[in-house]
Image 1 (tube, rainbow, N blue to C red):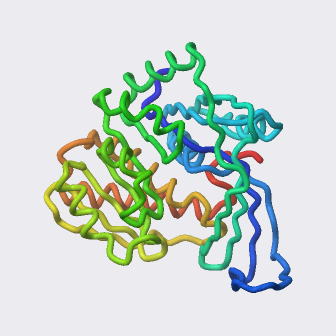
Image 2: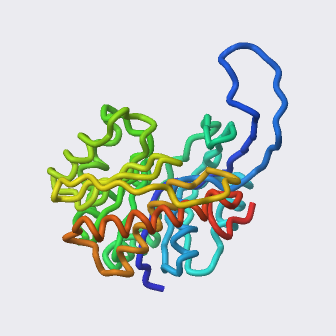
Image 3: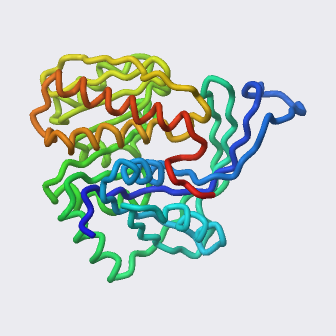
Length: 293
């Protein structure tokens, strides 16, 4: 299988606790509405959504030496998705997500993603896929950072998802330097437009900020700000909505062969495709379609 998209980054096992509201910062006892164990991780979410859209996808993730490593890899065993799990002598990544109505989330890292060595055979396979794929997604992670330089030289557009970037975190700098398409949400900036315009001025094909129920906005190389509303959705679980949005945009750009020279009408159509995929994500439990844990 020659992948159309390579996604490198994080996959985790998440404990998701749904509350009436996020707790105040004081000692207290509260009762959860429900709690679930589910696959998590930004790269896992993107890979599952891309696969559900029929895109042949390679997902590269670092996992540990615990039983949850097998759960993560089993959950990614779906049609159109090939996964390379890089094993490390450490726990797999674990999160505790406290969720409230309206999609508010407090995410707590219980175990960070392990740092995994890449055996020669797997390194060769990943390198070959990077050079063959049409789109490369390098998510914020140590394993993603390892492949930035090679990805930047492959010729395919590099997608970077900054999540709640505040404009100051230096960890993001090498990812930004490699990015052709930049995605983020509005949790870390009151006004993301100057940042999006700056990325476009520095050569990004597209810079996008998602705003939850308020939709999304973007800036292309022409500097025009384009805004769309969120797609209608019955909200069940907002985990993975941003990853679904990114996947919907990538799928649309591949379908229309518009991975360069994006004009405002094409940007608007791509954002609308992302919004439709995000609406699918919030209507199901789990980080992506077909997720099994």
